[in-house]
Length: 298
Ligand code: PPS
Image 1 (cartoon, rainbow, N blue to C red):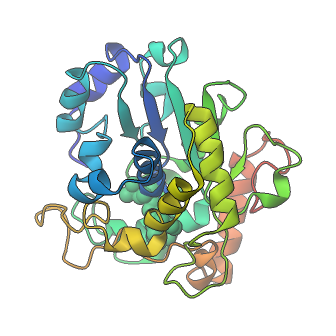
Image 2 (image 1 turned 90 degrees about the vertical axis):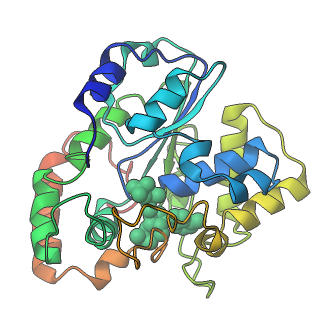
């Protein structure tokens, strides 16, 4: 990924967190969507900011060199984004008033999303086939390492009051069990809007309300409608400040698409039965010990 080891060391040892907001996820879990929603909440649905400033300048990417320096030099509360695992954060994260929003997704969909994404960049060696990428993913030999370690690390914070846990997939059925820390973000609504992004979807609305509550923001109904509209899959796909179409051409090929399918369960279109079984086996081993029902795909 071309990260600077020295910067990662500074994040770990000297980057002091304050009253910040950090949007976190393992790559390909829906972080860009969440950042767009948070930006729209901050501006009460006004689209000027999201349509004129690249998403990585609105919410700088902590582990990226330019993002790091921008954040270090910024005064007051900061909005930032990161894919780093928990152990690479400075200890002040756990004692500060920083608000952490962590979004997670079915790792099978993450795997497929990552395969199509990284293959169109030169940020990692091209796997050549889904089967090869599958092996690398299960071993953690992909950008940001093992999904299993990432989720285990961050979910250890799930009962903290400054931690909001969101799931890209359908969490509706779990709400009675974990009403405080699991929030439904997305479900495949079967509509035809180019990716099931769920324009004006009730569950997305509920999630935005939860995010507002967590961030201490209040929205008028028309502001909420604007946020639903401009954070939809289709609207984000068309927003060049958010869809990665302005990523440097030496990093990505022309047909790199961040907003590819925007669906839950797309892995079923790409995994063979053998791959699905192999995944399940590793999943059972690595996820032992989590409460039953925490993940909607189980
Ligand atoms: S990255 O590059 O790691 O930061 O990627 P990330 O943003 O975490 O995840 C990319 C996937 O999120 C989907 N996405 C959305 N889905 C529904 N609605 C909206 N608005 C939305 N925005 C992004 C995006 O399509 C990627 O998933 P796939 O399965 O590849 O389509």
